[in-house]
Image (tube, rainbow, N blue to C red; front, side, top):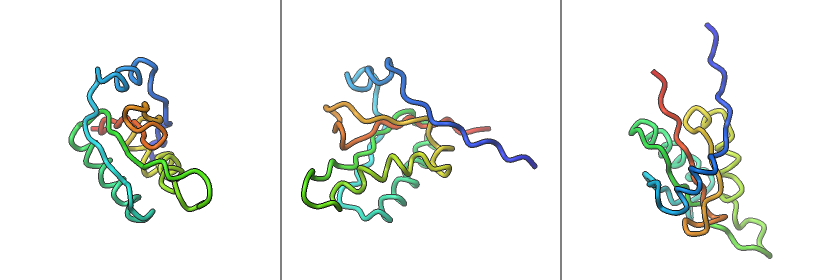
Length: 120
């Protein structure tokens, strides 16, 4: 049997992003990863996105935190890792795309994620 191709990620449209940032489109759910280890955050993200897809949600907000700029290179690990994880095949079947959130929703410390409709 032929395996289906992994769907590509696409950016949110300008219209969608504007509606989200202005509060004209609802953010259906939020996941706050603050204070989690990478392992725990990865697991929580995977579970959250599966649940969001199962529940038919459209847009979710993933809060990574900004970390601190400067001295400690270990700060902001989730801010760097989460976009990388979302690009992996295991997540691409769950999401259409993602972008940095508007400053009112956390800016560089958060991501808008569009959930892919389940097949079938």
